[in-house]
Length: 318
Image 1: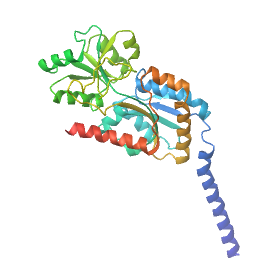
Image 2: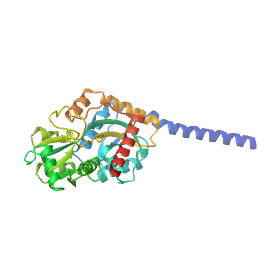
Image 3: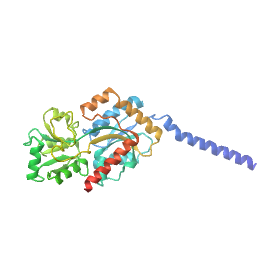
Image 4: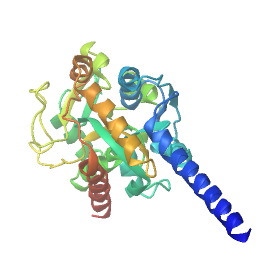
């Protein structure tokens, strides 16, 4: 009798273990079977929001489920990433992870780290510029920098915050004798309005984010922070040409999940994003926003985030 009871117990435990194992594997096998939320880590209207919403819209076809977008702004993107990190690691929550937020980690903001996330794909990247209003007395970077050298911190620049690559760029310029005052405005619309309306002297931004204002003649690009001129703005000098080498601070944007999401689910999301990135619609969108790149995935994407944090930390410490 004892042997029969032990046998039944062993069989019962085996069935339970098998059921648990199936329950663990099944979600990945039939994933996704319900909507996947995409957290945009900044407010409406900016580059991260535009990228996230376009990606979500295009992902619905290859994934076969709705991809609703939620804006969770604050703390240079860390508020949204904290929500992403603390949600269930089941692949039903994605988020935007951009270089501006990675830079904030190097500055000691937030409690997120590169190892807290798995980058599905880096989908966009662009160097940043300084733009001035069409009504500005400074029509070139040379004029702007010359005034700043004679009048330290009188030139104000709308940025996305302290501890970002915007902030790092201004620190490098200051070290080179061009002291510009940082005016942090996390809401994209506030930044744009401040420069166009003359409330700040300039704005630090990527061209795609302010394309409509550039095309309307309201904002003028005066310098690109890179070692080569931007092909779409060939008349705009680089910071290197002006004697201040500021490069390696491009604004990249990626889609990420929390670090514990299973490999099988990550692979499905990556495949869907690569399908989107190969589409004519995505290419047209990226071309319009000057952000087209070959998507970066896997360990290369993880390394891109780690390396960017290290670069910012080194520049902040120099």
